[in-house]
Image (cartoon, rainbow, N blue to C red; front, side):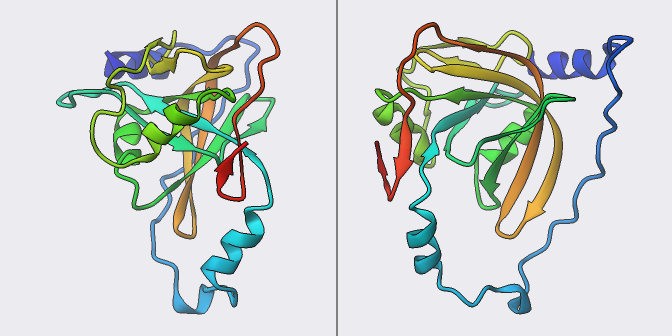
Length: 196
């Protein structure tokens, strides 16, 4: 199903007034060189940057052929990127075992978590296992990626570009559909190593 959706999205003509966005070439992946390492310790870097509170999301994608379940991981490095065209971005570690599954699907859905979803986030922050066991969700309208029940908002995307960024990859998504829950529920925030 995901492959069919990706084929459809790639073959569907853009509206006449929409500017065409050309895909970027695949980045050359390389290790961080010794001469590129910063003169600060990783512990100090984390301590200082931990003072910046971030929202928390779960990035999901549909199962591709041969996979028993959808893919998903907790992500606090999500950001809006561009209004025209509508683009968002998130960062993922190069060692992530979930990212290759999302990359194969070519699509993803960002689920913005609410303040009451800390346990759900913890479930998606661990490696391995079926993270969707017992998790209520439905399919995002374009990609078929899981939309998690209770999320404050969802952003349905196609992978647009991937860039290198040290020990992480910077993933840019083209927004195909999005929506938000009614009301003014508080978001789940992460600050100094804990949820707020």
